[in-house]
Length: 275
Image 1 (tube, rainbow, N blue to C red):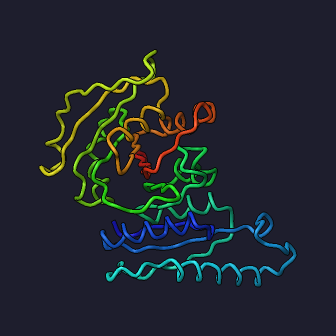
Image 2: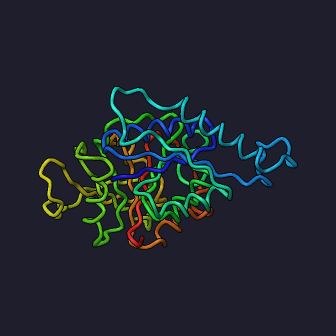
Image 3: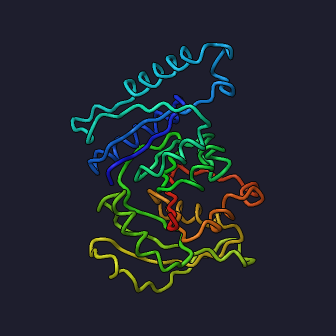
């Protein structure tokens, strides 16, 4: 992994994600770029909508520089290069997706109180998670970057699981202790039931230091099953990987996400195989 993009709106949540990204970058010797996208006509932080564009641009550049200076970690080690500021004119969600083609990972902060999926991550984060051309790591507002030792992977049993694990290791490094492959059976009347199933593919991933197991969870709500299991095992990271976008479409669909509000402090990594 070489390049990480961190979008910011200058909020405390974005600052936390920026610091989280620096820890990940230090471990992987990666570069961090920090971007802010704005559209003057729709930017409510602009108190003077008739302000000359050049002047407003200058203000935004100063805010971005201050954000980076005020939130760059002094860890005794360094990332590959100092964080680079990027200022774009346009709608944030569209600009982030457009830029994602040039990055290996996007790390974004979540809004709200740590709720799960659309209600938690806001419209920009949801759009980016669905349409970005690289993996997207969504970080709850108060979450600090620790070791990704226990990882829950929401699997739809695609043949691409092997490729996903290899890509996952480029993001987390070798610190993972266990990967828990989770398949949700939501065509059930059982409120929540977990059953371990035989998993025979561990040898494919080229590592003997990581434990692999697979569970079948009966739960009528996909998100509830994932979050509950992650809580049960004290997971450090939730991963959702899919071969096709339709799996994510169902997860992010309003009729599903509005059924229940979830509270989690676990970062969510969304990976797409069709990029």
